[in-house]
Amino acid sequence: MSTDTPGNPENAARREALSHGVGLVLALGIPSGSALAATPKKTAAERGHTTSASPTMNTITTKDGTQIFYKDWGPKSAQPIVFHHGWPLSSDDWDAQMLFFVQHGYRVVAHDRRGHGRSAQVSEGHDLDHYAADAFAVVEHLNLRNAVHIGHSTGGGEVARYVAKHGQPAGRVAKAVLVAAIPPLMLKTASNPEGLPMEVFDSFRKGVADNRAQFFLDVPAGPFYGFNRPGVKPLPGVINNWWRQGMMGSAKAHYDGIKAFSETDQTEDLKAINVPTLVMHGDDDQVVPIHDSALKAVKLLKKGTLKVYPGLSHGMLTVNADLLNADLLAFVRA
Image 1 (cartoon, rainbow, N blue to C red):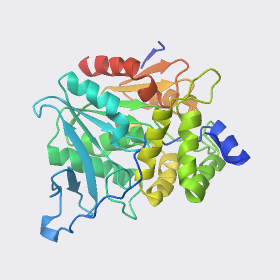
Image 2: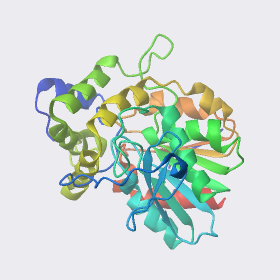
Image 3: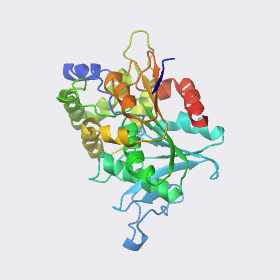
């Protein structure tokens, strides 16, 4: 292991939760004005990792019949970089990174998690096993090999599960990156006393159930990007984009996903990963505190490298994209 250190809530309960890192599982936003048009049902013979008939949307249908939207940009012969977004956002959260890497000659791929963004708003399967299996379905459909998988927040948990259970056994992974990621475990337990108490996650559930639209303004306007810190100027476009993405997804997927990102112990996933893995985390992350995530995760990885960013927030990939992109490129090239 090597180390390199280089809104407003509606009520007091929400305010307290935000101060503990209520932004925990988020990413960006998408306009909520209209729902996705229903696509014709496929026959059983047509199901599988197939491309949607829609001329404007790339989708596959997984083995359990869930349509997953994905983006695939750049030369098909180039090394692929696959991006995994956080809760409750979509692949649009990776705009700054996808444009950067495609301009550097890479093939870039990102999908919307089931129930998020433009993917199907299915009732079930909002857990890390399904998340990872859906990612693998996209990878198999596109036949991606020698890929670098980069995950943010809950997406980092998805990457860890995917690499350990699917990508690595199939020989399709070259490297992995966990950015402000949830592993190994967020919830406070007897064996994980540094974790966050269940009350924090219950406040998330309450926010989603009571007034999701307002909650999805409070989080990005507060702890997610550090806009609640003295002297930090809020960026309305960033806040609105987070809201846009979140409101495009399914309330049930968001509600169920809270359990997935907070209560899933990924210790064994991390131990199983044997590809070079970069762990990137801001030491002022109010959503996924560094002491209960990155500092533990890097000790469990066989080939882990930790890079800490002093003063940076959970949403540093967006508000500090130039810095993060340069470090990501250096790791991919190394």
